[in-house]
Structure formats: C-alpha cells, structure tokens
Amino acid sequence: MAKTVLISCVSSKLTHRAKAKDLYISPLFKYNLRYARTLNPENILILSAKYGLVPLEKEIDPYNQTLNTMKDKEIKSWAEQVIHELKKEVDLNTDEIIFLAGSRYRKYLIPHIKNYKIPLQGLGIGKQLQFLKGKVQHE
Image 1 (cartoon, rainbow, N blue to C red):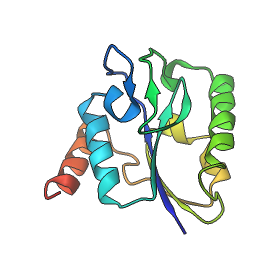
Image 2: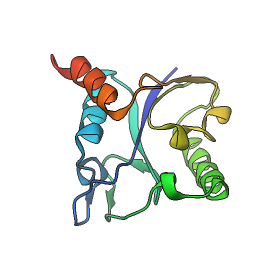
Image 3: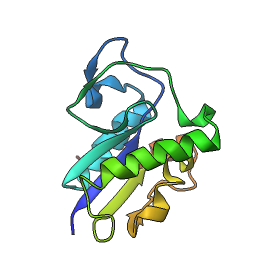
C-alpha cells in the first residue's frame, strides 16, 4: 500500500511561472508541504483549482482561480478530472490518501477513495498552522 499526500492550492502565489512546489508561497502551503514530507509518502501532489492534479516539480503559470468561488457543478467537473488523473498515480482501493485540503477540495474526491485521512479536518487556518508547526518543528 502506497501513501500519497494531496495538498490544496492557495491564493498566494509568485507572479511568474515556477515549479508548483515553489509557486505557492503562503505559510499554510509551505507548512503543509513540510508536514507532508515528514509522512514519507511515495508521492505528494497538489490539488490545483486551475490545473487539476499537479506534481510538485511541474512548472505552471500563476493563476487566480479557487474552488471556493465555483458553483457545485463546476467543482464536480473539476473533481472528475482529478479522479481521472489520480487513477494514473495511485490505487484508489488500496493506497492511503492523506488530504491536506479543505472540504471543497475533498468533497467529490472522497467517495472514490477507500483509504483516506484528513489530519486537519475541522480546524480553522490558525489551528491548522499551529498543528503543522508542532509537527515539523523538529524536522
């Protein structure tokens, strides 16, 4: 059973094309990425509102799009694309998927995934940062 971490995109980005792992510059994203690495997953992928499922090393352009402003129908369509891409990377029946992403990013993905964890579920941004800082302080 492989382990994959999915991190949602954030609005704070560089103003130029960059590798996905470098494009997102908010403290929340940076701590999510540091925490994800401590979990020793086989893969870390970004859930991008514009690009779908994005590998950390893939170069992408900055964008101004979020699932938070999309209609339900648009989010469902986005989720279908992500599940299609995710099936190429993981086994949705046996692999462990760890979500470091808000409910809008998870809602239509979870029904397709048998084995998942949501360590930050129910926490506001401040509590998420507090949790993540505590987990990576000795890294």
